Image (cartoon, rainbow, N blue to C red; front, side, top):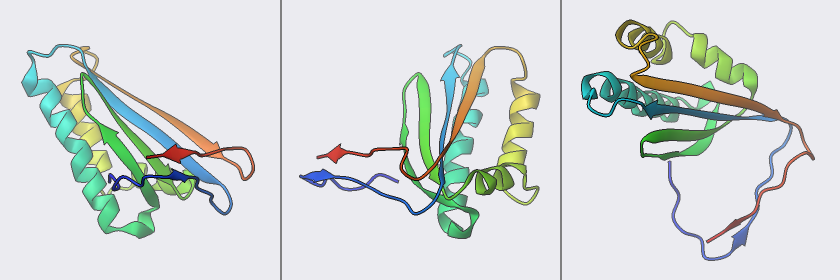
Length: 129
């Protein structure tokens, strides 16, 4: 989902509301690869599905890897995001069920998300290089 470098100052605007979604995982026990690797591999599957089906509402975003893995996502709406998350025909629910079975409350892997609905006129975007 990364874009090429644009050597200038840029801004972005959207018509109407949109949704910003931050989701990530934290590897709490690095030696338990069998616990965190399947969790880590679930996100690229979901992103591929979302990129192939623009009608689901993902507009774009980025992905960072480290001990804490973060995906920043922009969605057409909060409703699009929650519809995807709860759809029985998409990648998310099986990934969530697998996480609960394999990791549960063990603490081996932490997952988190934050969701923000952004209204017109309540944000600023500046990108340089």
